[in-house]
Length: 163
Image (cartoon, rainbow, N blue to C red; front, side, top):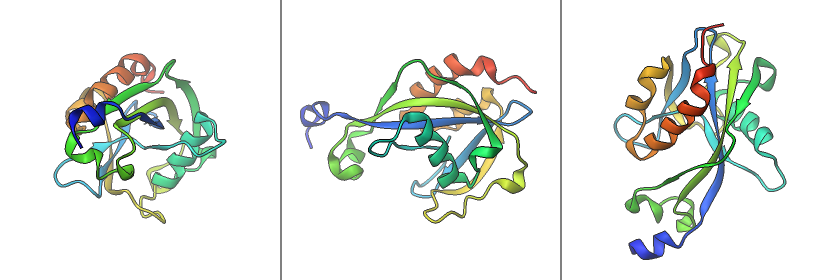
């Protein structure tokens, strides 16, 4: 696809979850489908007829095994945060129908234990996971998503204080 064709594509609606533990650290997983370091917070698409909050809780459980009863939704971004895929990925993802994603982010507080996390899900997305401090988050994220993570941290990061 040419850059002009890609620029005409829409964004895919999506949700993201900034999951914080009691220490104020953020959950990240290493993507299975990316060579090298590619950490990210849980995220995924919104199904037809589904609201963003429900999608965020569903995606969190699908990707991490963490059930809704183990979290409290503390905040959400006021708007949607978009990122463009690198041009070489556009035709490989979502059958080339989207230029990137437009995301609504939710801050959730985790009340469980590490034993409640299970990334060996029906459709695994991560090879490993860890808790990291908010100050280390941007450096761990794949470069094309960093601007979105930076804006989400700016909006929600003030609520990450240890509990």
